[in-house]
Length: 298
Ligand SMILES: O=C(O)CCC(=O)C(=O)O
Image 1 (cartoon, rainbow, N blue to C red):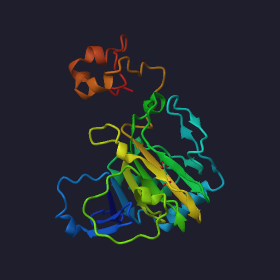
Image 2 (image 1 turned 60 degrees about the horizontal axis):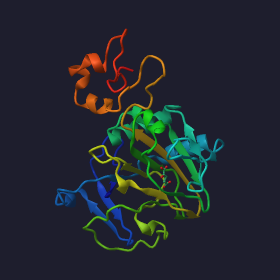
Image 3 (image 1 turned 30 degrees about the vertical axis):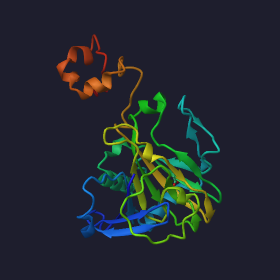
Image 4 (image 1 turned 90 degrees about the vertical axis):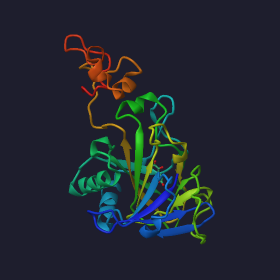
């Protein structure tokens, strides 16, 4: 896991980039795009911070929609996939329906532009409030249960938008992330002890963090383990957009034979079997095939 900072020069263009890496040893590096030309060619970025991704108005708007609807946050049970309350996650939150209003739709457009991932693949934005001492312990955003993967497949990426500054604590930390090899040292006294246990991002109103939970080969990336550190002073507001590998909006009903009847369907479909072996994979309306879901017929 490497962390890049990007700054928004204009809403339309993301060309000018700045890289800032905050390390466990409290080092911080800022590189401009020129210096990046000499950067390690084997370098693979899996996390990015976009400075000023949201305007103050967008941040305040999300908070104003959420603030009277908050409920204690839940986590998904690893085996059953069912939602449950847990001391692992003590924030409060709520979901805002996709494209609820023009401002929300505009934020979703920006996320799609930044991530190159379709809007359909995203879940509703979840707004979270962390009060003093509240946190989210280290976890992965990809699922290990079958229930949650059924809709849209694995979560591939997360965009975490900070809607407020936090006086102390509340950082997002990646405890298993690889520390970049080349960096200058300078201290960052501001980080909490929790944040010093990994590569950390300090919440700043309007900034957004994008990280990938799957490797480029589509297998889960263990270095994406991350946590929301306890808030020590102040209050933290954030908004999360989880993005899946496939459409989260597509209705997968029990009816209409929209199912895979073989666990290899997805792999076969990726190998082109939906066309090469259409009789088995797709079938006909009278005699539906075995991999209609993976062949994207529904
Ligand atoms: O609030 C944070 O910094 C982390 C939130 C998080 O891990 C999540 O929403 O998946």
